[in-house]
Image (cartoon, rainbow, N blue to C red):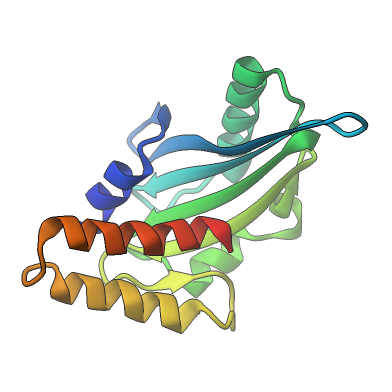
Length: 166
């Protein structure tokens, strides 16, 4: 259920759909500066269907798509990645958020991992918002049957927006 709600909320452009993952992205902001040039901030949603992750390949697809669409080089892109997996958590975050991946080909990356089975969220080991955000998502799922759908979707949207703004 969480996976389909994330895709629905995210409403991004599908870049790739394979047996191992789905990759979507959407533009958050585009800033044009006189001296710095154009900078773009995006969010990427990765739905993992197995335990294989080729982050460099996913990042290259994002860079290529953004470059083709907006003519922006990778050093002017910052991306917040939402990795969704049935086995997601701190260990998956540590596997993805390596030094090499945080700055891939100049693109600045931040990572959030969401366990789609139990709603656990990881911004990183020991991050102050891990527990609070996980509890909020679990509480929303507990309330999903008793509050009006529109009210629930608004609350869910607020939480997910917070994930991409950290």
